[in-house]
Image (cartoon, rainbow, N blue to C red; front, side):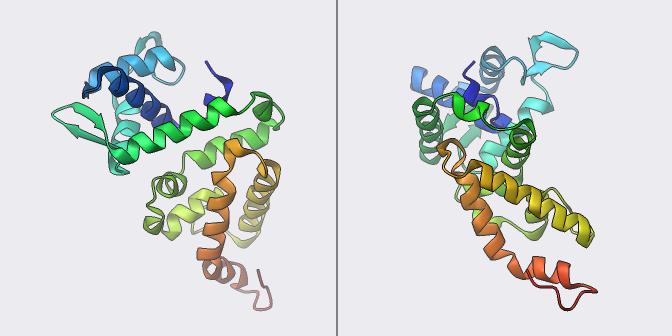
Length: 208
């Protein structure tokens, strides 16, 4: 397996699988065929729990597949799947980026940074941003992106903001993750007042 693919969310891996299958067959493919192909390509992600030699055809695989549908990347009718034009473009972008980048880019990042990247890539905020649905991002998505909730206290919120900012600083100039800094800048700008409100409750002189 290409090391550059190990940190991808499940739905991105499924998008690559669907793209490969649809391109090869020039037609729709069944959900069951996708589940089997995904298991063969990414066995660690799509095996049946407790039975690593078998593909998972349950919710663990179906949920990310239907997320692709939610984001307008695939169409599903009667369990037959095909790529939309938007999905084909997104899949080709993923494949192009990985084909151009050396594996050493990932190796240079510390484990905690890589784990944070994986977490961010799985958030709804990231997926909505990558599928041109950024206006659908709400404040709960933003806090989830930071690794917090709307109830997180001021001190923990500041700590999480610093952690995510450290991630952004670590991956600047790394084309493999170039969309994360763009997302971060967009979210910080859009939810600036939300952050200021959270940070100034009980601390009227605090500014972001």
